[in-house]
Amino acid sequence: MEIMETDIQNIKEKFSAMSVLVANMYMDALRSLALHDEALADSVIERDHEADRLELELDEMCLRFLARFSPKASELRFTVAILRLIVELERIGDHSKVLARQVAKFHLAPMLRDLPEFQEISILPYQMLNEAIDAFLAGDAEKFPIIIRTDETVGALQKSLNESLVALIKKDASRTGPAIALVNIIRRLERIADHAKNIAEMVPYVTVGEVVKGKALP
Image (tube, rainbow, N blue to C red; front, side, top):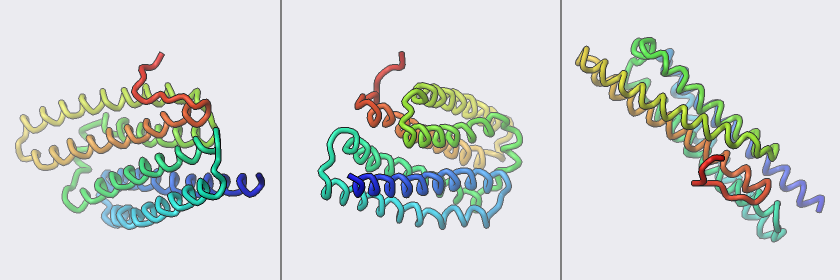
């Protein structure tokens, strides 16, 4: 039993390290856009290799754990959840890499200053991700509904920002290229929020064995 617990702790620690790495990649990608910092953007792109490496290591650790112990109940649910969640984290890393690559293509900082809602939609996925990871590691299913409702806020902000960008293009056609780039960036922010929501949906499964994906909130 002690060996099993040690393996679970090692998986948790590496999962936590991957979570921190991906969350930092996301925030640094946003900073690189806001500051037009190509060096910071390049560092985000480079860190994606580390995220991929951690995903592979965690995948191997989980498969070895399943083969070694044939776990049941809570330990099995935990391992299955990790295998799913590292895919969500890897995709957030991929989205962050794509965000960072926009720095070399467009100077978006001036336009971002005209879109105050962009700051809000930027920070919400980061908060959702951190809250989902904390809830997962702590086995705290109570945070799940809060994170899901935050995802709805992100969707509303995406719609509002898209309308603002369309109005901006109509007013000044010379800004069409950067505006379309921002529409795509905002779409990726919404996708990152979806991945954070997917992580949150695994918390009830791990804690009490309840599958909540696709279910309406009470």
